[in-house]
Amino acid sequence: MTIGDRIKQIASERNLTISSIALGSEVSVSYLNEIVNNVKKNPSVYIVKNIADYLQIPIENLLKN
Image (cartoon, rainbow, N blue to C red; front, side, top):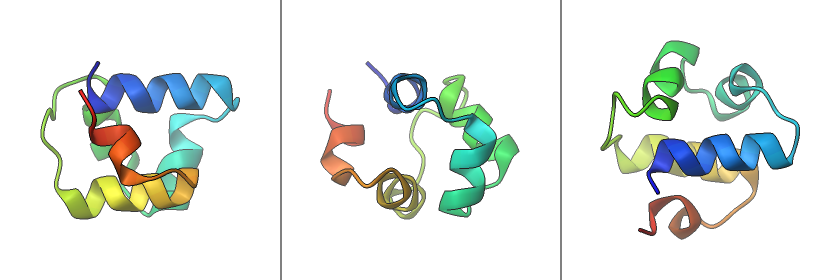
């Protein structure tokens, strides 16, 4: 499962939109869409940390294989 797949799964479980995650994590919607759609397969740790912090999960939850 990719980082994008995990973000989609969490968004679905929590009834969040990708736009709301982008806004809350201060990541552009277009960049987050690229991550979620597996165009960007290796986003920077800084970006992943912002997303994990917004989702209130350990960064490892997004990085694990």
